[in-house]
Image (tube, rainbow, N blue to C red; front, top):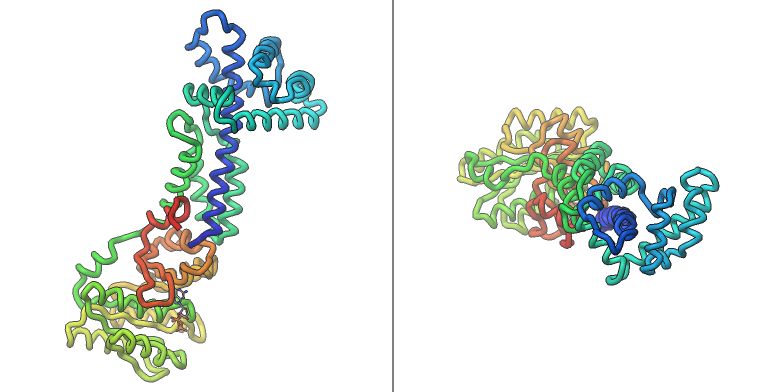
Length: 426
Ligand SMILES: Nc1nc2c(ncn2[C@@H]2O[C@H](COP(=O)(O)OP(=O)(O)OP(=O)(O)O)[C@@H](O)[C@H]2O)c(=O)[nH]1
């Protein structure tokens, strides 16, 4: 489910991990530079550590800013002795090119050399033993790896593009990025186990914040409401509205609640036959009127039937499209006046992406909804609708349709959805 988006979120994690790893190596390198010139003397660890933090972030020592003074050169010499710099192709990167970076002259060779040095350090880090490991350990110990705004700039830009490509609504994407910035910038690696974990937590929190908007205890509300509980379903044709009503009938019946279905879609030819089939399959009572009849009257009759027969839940279908959207909204308003439903649920399909988000907004603006049912989550969709609808409407996604069978509906669980997107679950 939502595999494309999941992959994109994974690559954000990898980007940030890579950036942090490079930084970690830079900082660890600086740490060794500071401590190695006086190997036989007192290590003066506390001074080295506290200064080292500044040195690491300001001078960005051997890779980025280069050896600007003799001390650094000396340190490099000492380091060559332990073989670390030897990997970096020592002299080209270390001596000749570094001043260029600082001067701004000959930018290209300098940055190439820096890249070579960085690549060599990364290779070094890839080894599980030896100096690379020591460097990482040193960086962990000092806790000096701090994620700064510029470290996240590129990965966040990539993430924003990925979210927009996945049909996440613009404001929702912005909100996600803001939360990630807030959670990550200024965090030190010493406070968490790995950068990957830090990214995962930030992504998790950012997604959860938007996905969980407006959630409430659906079953609890139904249980507490006076019976019959009337639920009206809105949404355009073909997205799985009628099928979702049938699935919900099964859902309630599985909980021991009795159901009557009502076909308020008196507009579309064949609508009665379609829902009739479901009613027969489920052995559920159905109220219909002739095509062209008044949808509010059908629902009114269904509520009367439920009251007369002690039925717990009325599930009402409505037309997905009329001549104009004004007609459609007038119809929903009339249903509201006549049966005063306990809940109005908007149904749309996950595969509709941005369109589903837009429609959710329009329907909610015109006739306030209480929540949404997102169908076809089993199809290979981008995930943008699942992420955006609650934040955009302020109303939660309550159910996910996960197939064509009557049991293929599940209560939307924001935590589980986030785990699907950033965790192991698929
Ligand atoms: N894969 C998948 N298919 C679904 C799901 N929900 C509905 N469908 C299919 O989508 C198609 C349209 O569903 P309907 O229930 O007829 O859609 P509708 O919104 O009621 O459309 P109208 O009846 O035209 O108003 C049907 O073939 C359903 O089987 C789902 O969660 N997953």
